[in-house]
Structure formats: structure tokens, C-alpha cells
Length: 337
Image (cartoon, rainbow, N blue to C red):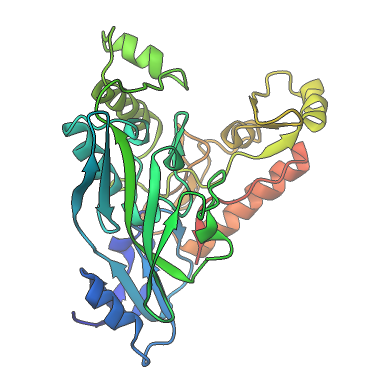
């Protein structure tokens, strides 16, 4: 374990924002994590995983802890199911591919999502009709104050749409160290009715898809729609899809007859934030080194050397415009630091 000074965080966030950490350390074991968290000389600490769901707006005048806990193992299994434990520092997409290579089903729809395993439960990542909570069993997390380890069950986590206990009452109190998933070994349930998965499989000439086929279809769709963070800085979807009342939706239909929606409850529907942003004229807009991606209005991008505060200011302009045009409040999905 070696604490470095004045380290650029540009390689550690998918937005590619160049801000500095006064102190930086990468931890690769539970013991190292305990030691660093117990250090009294660094009261101001920031936990950093894959850096995929954050927008850094300023230098961090403290100690950044990069979680680099690696390892995947089978905890238990039957003829039908398997429980797999993945440590927090594992890349999420590589973990999905590992499961597919072993014919473990359940998370194939979550292919190609950036970030690490440890941060996935925090916002209950989801895509193409599937959420992390669907296969989640439990996670282990370390208390930042006393370094004790606690197991959070699925019910403990209070999962919601892009939300969990780690974004509410347990926010900034724990760091997730590992996650357990319950996956299928056979008779996989395929989720292919969401979005363009079915048509993509048809274009691929696949009539009887496997979980690997579903994953490949989703990867192909995401590669067309979303920019690769290694080429264009971004954090994936910047905004949550808002949930509105059916009354407001009916009112909006009078002026926007093509406004899409997805049922949530008897009284509410979900409206795609990307549609709202595109309708407001922001899709493909570029201002200096930042803007909205040309293929996906939900994605704000850094074309090179954008500053985090500029992207934040731009996101607020989008929110203000959406509120004025549609009377809808859209919330940021990313963490602003």
C-alpha cells in the first residue's frame, strides 16, 4: 500500500475530467482497506470505484481510495442455480462475460454497462428490462467509521429505480466490498421484448437465442447508440427517466401526441428523459468541448478537455428547459462531486 500525492483522476473517471487528488491510494485487499480507512491523518476521504457514475467538478483536497478488490468465485450451487460472489473491484462487463462463459444466466441484459461490481448495487443498475436487484442476493460492506463488515440482504438494500439504501440513509457510511448473485444454470429466462433486442436478434439471424446471443445483441445496440468512454468521455445515462402522473401525461399528449410512456402504476407512467431532451433540441448540441451525444440524448459528453463545472452548468440548463417546456423535473443519475 502506497499513498501517492497530487494524482490526476482523469484515468479514474469515465467522463475523463482532469482534476487532482491531493492524496491517492489503491487498495487491493480487505486488510488494506481497513488500514486506510482507520488512518486519522486523512479525515477527508473519497471512495472511488470504476468512476463511471460520477461527474468530478473540482480537485479533491483529501485522500481518494481506489477500490481494486479482485476475485470471482462460486459460493454454492444446485442443478438449477448458482450463487456467485464477485469482489467490488471487478469490472462489471467483464464479470457479465465471465458468467456467460460459464453459462450462468440472469445478467446478460446488463452487458456493456461501464463501472465496477461494487458500485452496481448503489444505483441498482438496469437496462433492457432487467435490474441488478433481479439477481441480487446480498452484499458485504465495510463501515467507514469502525471498519466493521456488515451483510446487506436484498430487503435491507431498499432497491428502487436507480436507487438503494446506499444512496439514502447509508450514503457515505459504507463501502461495498463484494456482491453475491443468484444466477440460473439452465432453463434460462430470456428478456428479449424490451427495446430493439428482438429485431437485433433477427438481424443477426438468430432464431433460438441463448443468453450469449442476447448479450451480443445488446452489446451491438449499445455500441451504436452510446459512445465508448475510451473514445469520448461520458458517464452513460446522465439523467433518470422521470415518473409523472397520468394526468400530466394526458395534458402533455394534447401538445405532444407522440410522447412515449411506460406504465409504472395505476396513477403514474415513466417518460423517457432522452425523448424530452431531444424534443427540447439538445440532441447533438455541442458547446466547446462538451455537449449531448448525437445518437443518444441521455448522454452528456466530454469531447476532450471539458471541465466538470461546465458540464454541470450545461446539465442544469437542460433541466431548466425541460421543466419550462414540459413541467417535468428530470434528476441527474450521476453523482456530482
